[in-house]
Length: 320
Image (tube, rainbow, N blue to C red; front, side):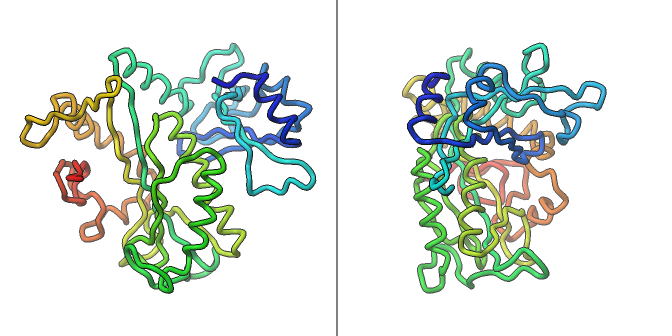
């Protein structure tokens, strides 16, 4: 566990001049405020105030005072920033009310509470997302891709391999483990798979991933888009998420004697996802464009069901 002293020590050793404080609104959009290194000690202790009524889905104007409290465990350098005039770091924040109590609608707090409930039952929740996105030559007019490559294509069809390589290297420099990267099914569509870890860490890593992908794209003069369905008639982009519950070192979802190798815990978990699919969908597919992706024929879920290998089902139990 990192504490204030660790953060202050690292900031001094790395010549950090600015620290970006990050948090998300309820739609998953990243918010950021920058402070100078001179303010870091105070802000770690007291947080930084902001207008909660100006954040999508937070509070009304008559209760707008809110505080972003930095989580020292999330202190990381931003390696793409120039270090000539001083380095830049980031810290994720938890949102609290003026009385110091957690803000109940803060996505990070909602996740913390859920993980605490799982821990009380003896479980640790691990996730490993596969985040898909497109590269476009510009962000204006009709989108024009960089290539005509397809799934797992190698260069020269996959001309964006250098962008993915640079992205992976930056992620690893930030301590985010990467399993693989490759060209996806649609032209100019790509994917970088993060190695599974606990859900809270992965939530922070996922937001960081999106920033790094876009920063590298800008460096190359192109535009990266996580839009669900930017091109009609082509596969859209999703975030397939591998999920597992562990009890200690044992996979609580696995039962070698079951026909489908699923434990009762796994079956109950699947049943819960299916039961609450409408509510989950409101959170994970909040844009009109999201539903343009959820149509048959493009490897997107269109059935509220589970299957062993079918990617058209909401839940897939992989065979490998």
